[in-house]
Image 1: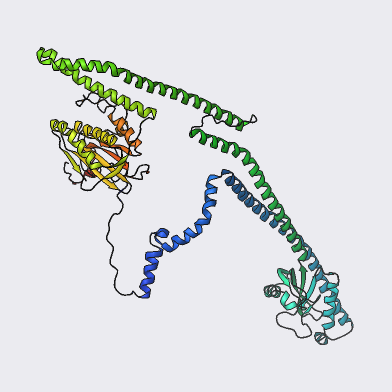
Image 2: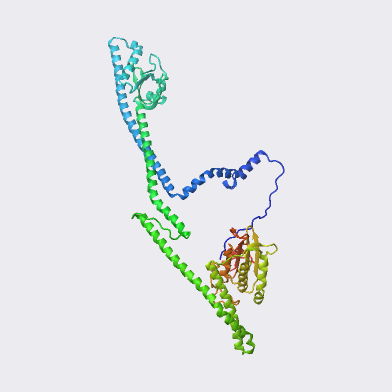
Length: 608
């Protein structure tokens, strides 16, 4: 049987390490700060981090408390977050599809336009070369023919059909700009900055058209750059010399369309998220409101207001729940009333019987005393019967007194007359009173911890009755071994523990031992004339003081009963200065239930 843990005595002394003399180097101080202050035992070992976390957590504590207690807030926030995730995912997919569709359409149209432009440029070069050959100009003179006007006319003619839909740029291959083949562009485009270098490299190394994305920059700084698709190809001029021809298609309209789609999706998504949050709030409110009402009514029912009922409207599942709850509360109220009536009848019966038995018992007691005094004149059998009659009448009177005391506790009529007392004096009176019984049993009663005063505000009569029950039971069940009574005080509590080394308690008997008329061994005879109500009355006396009466025991290892009282009346207990399980128990000594060392070790234990 394992007992509960008790609070240890505060003010436990310890040793403080001495502070070294002198100052540490800066590196050592920084290392000690990092390893010993900031990162020792994680965050809990760092005063700085604890302060920062406390400063951060302080404004968040109300929100955390609201989050833990409000299921409606949880559902609404979860719905909003999930809806936001779905809207974001859907928005990314839609925007990606729209962007791909717009770009694909733009690329196809641009490629068709650029292919036609490259064909026109080749046709114009062929026509100009044929016209020069028809004029009878020699080939070497045609090689030096000036193509400046032809190139300018080509750019102008090719860009004339664009009307802002595209621009045309011609560049010499590589860095060659001789022979009048310098950069030319339409619409004020800066050809060198608008055409990417990697695209030019692909155009110069291949014979087919190549494309890339870029930004169109203009020679005039007043006009802002804009995204564009560039398609280029290497073609020949009338002299047969290669040059680079590029078509630049602005993507401004597609960018505006995509921005419009993004704005529309963002607005619609925000509206959908807010709408879903409002819907979730309304739906959850319809479910949570009856649950909150039921919780409030349940709290009031637990507080004793058994007439509380839920308001039921409709015929849905919530209404059925409310009706079931009301029926349960009604049945519970009826059962409690029946139990209260039965308990009241039992208390009245016990009280009435106890009072009514007083008068005949007094008469029988007087007659028994007369017979007991004249027993020497009787024969041995009759004399023995007179002695047994007197003993049983004593026990009967004790039983009536205990029944009357129990009836007072049950009726709530027991009163406490608390005053400051020294428990050492109470313990001495109890030990002196139990000395004759201990002498007959061959048991020695030792008192431990009576060097210092143990003062508490308590009812001396009730405390003495509790301790008398504990000590007498310990002597009776101690099998002739020593009984130790220990006193201690710490903080706002005082305690008295009675330890015996007799038969002990089996698992589960530590709580049943305080039941009325309960015996650990039903076949065991009561040698002290007990009534079976002593520990029950002792438990009620402890509760009347606001204290604890607890038991611990192990089979064959004895038992310990601990009485813990507040030092000041009406002061709540937070612990006991004496542990419920003694230090000499088998578990604390490393022994198993059979008294052997655990794990087959060689640890020895001395018998107390």
